[in-house]
Length: 104
Image 1: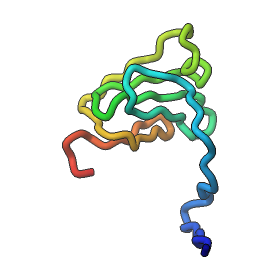
Image 2 (image 1 turned 90 degrees about the vertical axis):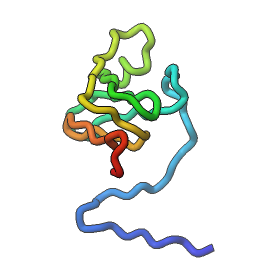
Image 3 (image 1 turned 180 degrees about the vertical axis):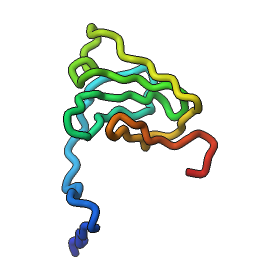
């Protein structure tokens, strides 16, 4: 086998090197969706976008609040439009998502 050559663009200083086994952190009502952390420095918040299309998402103060069922309820954020898919990210507190029924 020939290994693929990894090159980094000028604006990228990190490359994904491996993916480990699946670990279930939380179960929700919908089998589809995504959860993620804001990677910006100093942010501990975790976000859950349940399903593949909605106009709301949940904001948790920390991973601990996200994983505990007895923790305080998360903040429900309602958007002025619907999102679709599962390829979302929050960066510096701003949600980047695919607006429903648009090409990108």
